Image 1 (cartoon, rainbow over the protein chains, first blue to last red):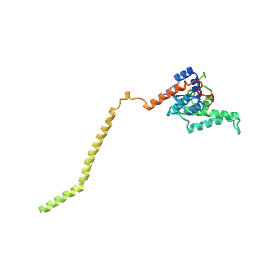
Image 2: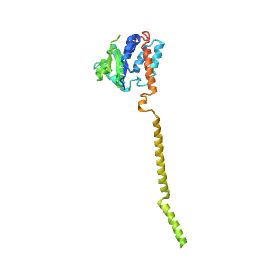
Image 3: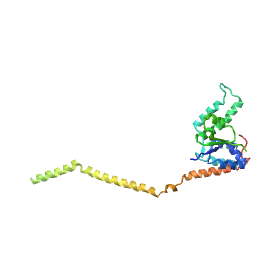
Image 4: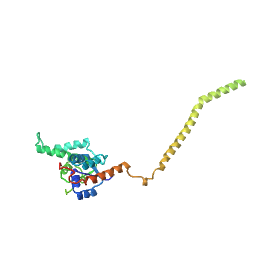
Length: 147
Length: 91
C-alpha cells in the first residue's frame, strides 16, 4: 500500500490562495488522506458557500481517506501537552494556556497521522517538537517553505 | 419336520436380518451414496468460480474505493482553487 500524505491546515490554506503552490503540492504529495481535525479547522474558518460545499464533500469520505484521532491519540496528545507545563506549575499564565490550547490540535493531527502510518506535510515548525518527543521517524514529517 | 424346518429357517433368517442389522447396512449404503453425491455437488458448486476473471484481469480495488479516491481528488482540486477570500485568518 502506497504511503499516504496528510496536509496540515496551513498547507491547504496557502494552496487555496496561491494556485502555483497548490499545483505543486498536489503533484508532489499523493495519494492523500485528510485528518478530520484539519477539516474542522477549515470549517470554522470557511467564509463562503463554495468552501462549505467542498468541505462537506471531504467530510463524507470514508477511512482511510478521512480519519479521526483515537482514544490513544488523545492520550498521547495529553502526555505531550503536559510536557509544555514547567514542573510544579499550578496556575499557568494566560500565554501558556493559549500555547497549550493551540498545540492541542497540532498534536492530535500529528499523532493520528503517524498512527495511520502516513506522512504529515506542513508549512510551520510546530510539529518538530512533537516529532522529537514521540520518537517517530523523521521522514514522517515534511516541512515546506510557506509561499 | 418340514414345517418346523421352514419355521425355524424363517425365524432364523428373520433373526439374522434383524441381528446383523439390515437397516444399518442399508443406512451405510445410502449414507455412502449421499456422501458421494454431496461431494460431487460441492465440486460442481466450486466449479462456478471458473467463470470469474483470471487473476491478471481482476481489478485491484473495489468500485467504492475508486470512487472515494476520485471524490477526494476532485474536492482537493476545488479546495485549492477557492481563492484567498474563502477562509478567515483564524489560524
